[in-house]
Length: 95
Image (cartoon, rainbow, N blue to C red; front, top):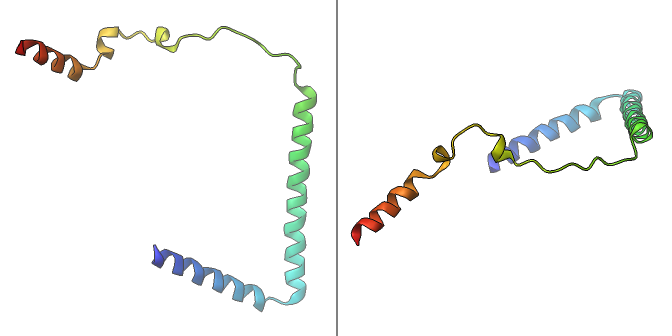
């Protein structure tokens, strides 16, 4: 675990060094690009949330809960735990 942490720290140090080696105008331009992408993404999410809330129905559908066990076509005998039945049979055989 310590080896992974040291490798990640070294990788971050190399990234920091390469960032510091860039000229100042490139650092500012990259920062501006990242901020613009973040702004577009935020605007898109806000638009999507507003669109979804405006177009949603204001009613709740209330339905009965359906039992998922009844939907299965397996026989109930195959669902039983065979280990439990074997142990129960051994207990009854002792008497």
